[in-house]
Image 1 (tube, rainbow, N blue to C red):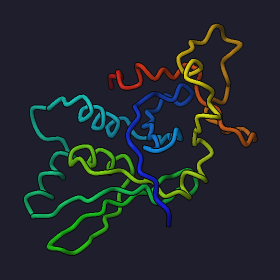
Image 2: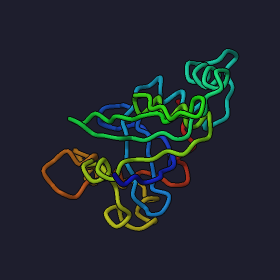
Image 3: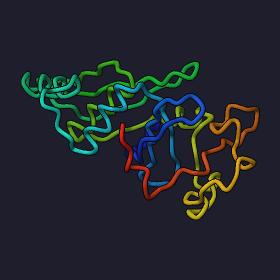
Image 4: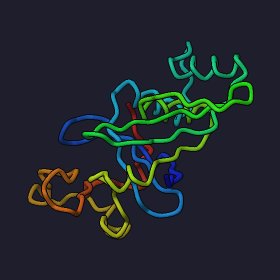
Length: 184
């Protein structure tokens, strides 16, 4: 099983479903993988990226603290599978010198990975099987990413590639410069 290391590229809202999306980007290439997440998980991810400390520990902070207190270490997280449009992940930890894998939703695993500063990996098969994986060549050049929509005729009714085309579409208004300036 080949795994690809990815970093969080940003958070955005799906304009169709009004649902948060975490954008993962391959650290070596320009491939990006969107993962739809819940609003609470997106908020937990956003808070950590922004380094905003809540007055009391949130669930992912509690999990990080518990892992640390019992002497365990999170080595990495891996998005392992994509089944019927649902992503699956594991948190790989070391406890007393033994490797342990904990089943997780990708959103929770990503929120924890940010808090413990561990790498994020995605199984290559997941990237290949996701109809929404974005390659730089499929999106266009950087100018296309920065372009604003001029009129409603340019709006794709299916911005996330759910039609029968093999080529996924990406929102034309995804701006690289402000992709991490989100507020949840």
